[in-house]
Length: 424
Image (cartoon, rainbow, N blue to C red; front, side, top):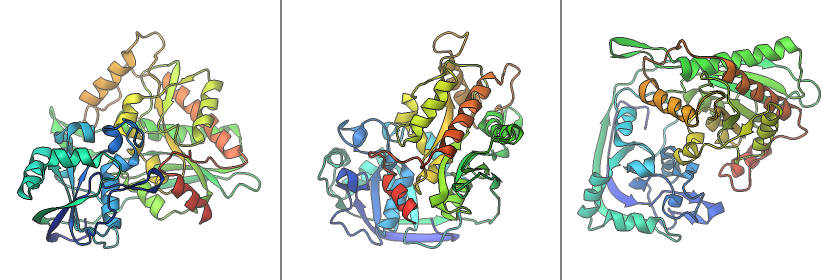
């Protein structure tokens, strides 16, 4: 976790349940614990996975994401964090952990902190670790999902080391501003999408060029198309519009994180972000979707824009359970209090049988996602993309011309960050 080529940590281990500090939910897994300089062992997901009355039930909150676990461990001055994996709690198999956490890793260069080591434990390995200290993982995991849980020392010491070869490189976000008019012109609405993919990589069936046609050349082209539409139409909104090409999304939202950490526009002046990450190239739909519409009042504006295009807004339950809201560039801005969403395709395709859209999505994930085969296919069409972009443009105008900025919902985990942003 440090910007060093070799780190080592030998220290006591403490089980901190889900590793969550959520005052609005009356939840603090670190209460009464001193984890400074120690390893914390953490469950991924949140207690709602076990008890539907807690947090948002089966719908994953940011408190459940592994990225939050690391952030909170750092805030608690822990020196190491080990995440306990199960396919159900992580929403992906162990092979995904292996592919994401082995080999070259790309990270932002950040100031030193207490955290030295971060990694994952397969559940079976974690169980043996707990047994060495006379503890039972299953029993403690069950207790961790109940209100009032308090973490416990595991009675074991862990000796861990990481040896790396560090290579420093630079990349850049690309921003273009279309000035607004009037008193609100200093404020902006971001319309963005990431322009990076994987370049040349490991060959698959003899092909080593990772084209990224859907992910995310489609989104990059869409951002440029929206910008062109505003310029050609002559429409000028009250708030300015800023079009963003984010770098290094595939390396962990690094470009958008850099913008959030070192904003070129004051955070209080960024009203919202509309993100375009994988655009519908499969055909026209009767519906449309977007991530996190219940998180803020942005959802109501998006629904209004969709209705103007004759589209019904549907909610992707699978995306909610998998925490998709926390996995694209709008999320980096949400963490610092800026309401946002990623616009997604609907699933009810015109002229296609029920379930066809899900079938195409599943086939893309299985055969083309992050593969050299993510190429422009001869049957692709722009009809569905145009629907999405028209809704995006309408939403941008509604946000840009509204008298006030969108606000977070009372139940959103980003509400406090949003209020802090406006006070800054």
